[in-house]
Image 1 (cartoon, rainbow, N blue to C red):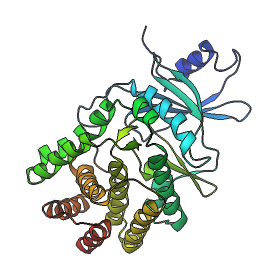
Image 2 (image 1 turned 45 degrees about the vertical axis):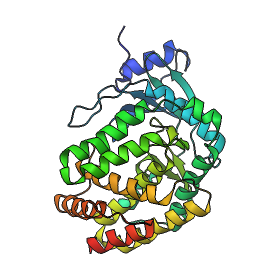
Image 3 (image 1 turned 180 degrees about the horizontal axis):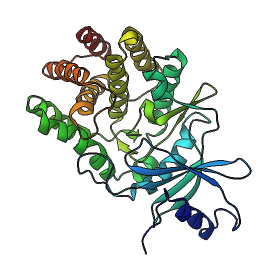
Amino acid sequence: MMPPDIEDPGQLLAYLRTCRIIPAREVPRFSVLHGGVSNRTVLVVRPGGEEWVAKQALEKLRVKDDWFSRPERIVTEAAGMEALARIAPPGSITRLIHLDRKDFILIMQAVPRPHENWKSMLLAGRLVDDHFEQFARLLASIHAGGATPEMARQFADRSIFESLRLEPYYAKAAERVPRAAGFLRALIEETRTRQVTLVHGDFSPKNVLVHQQRLVLLDHEVIHFGDPAFDSGFAMAHLLSKANHVEGRRQDFARAAAAFWQVYRTAGGLAQEQHSVRHALGCLLARVHGRSPLEYLTREERARQSASVVGMMERPPLTMHALIGHFEKELS
């Protein structure tokens, strides 16, 4: 029997009733949530006002390239939600309501309204210092709290990280930018050998909602036990890419990126600085030449980011401060 398509209202309603997640006569309202490439995602609004988000993992991702990943990652995401709720700041992780291991469907509590997507706020040039500090403390709490034998056993499977990050980001960028291939292939091997703590794998402003000035982290399907420098580099690449794009706030983004790194370190983050610098460079290039390029960068911005990063890969900066300063100078 084919799994239901949760973006079809009739199929989702039948599913919720058949699984006894809602009463037989209840009729919620459904709204498809667009923007993600790896899942079907639907907002479920119940008659009493309670709101849920239903997610269904896709095997073929919604991008131009052929990009596949096992839909069983939804099970990993559910486990990640429960693990992160124990170690992250209170209120920063949504509550799991339902997990279907057969049809790869997850239902979680929705973030209360009103809320805003942090990525959208940043692209509009709305930078709030405390948001960057919260972002850093949240990452530090994940890394500090995730360095346990229990986490190592529970999240030992790194295959989803391989299929959603190392191959489509670093390996694909290495294939498309021969001058960077040596750096990126070495980075892949370094990352595979480091198993230090819990790694979110998708720690970016896109996956953060802001409710009452507090950050809530979403989308945990790439979570695994590995190298924390991937998370810090991944996050830094997103902040610097926005510095590239939002020209009028370029210095403010550079300052905020530096504050993010400083707060992360003082809050007990485990990522080593030189490793984080290397991942930041890898992700900056991958978001131009990998399978999932940043949609907001113009052709000129992509070329500028690529040239700056490839140059730095030949002699990587030793500190995050040096990386930020060099990148800002190149943009100017």
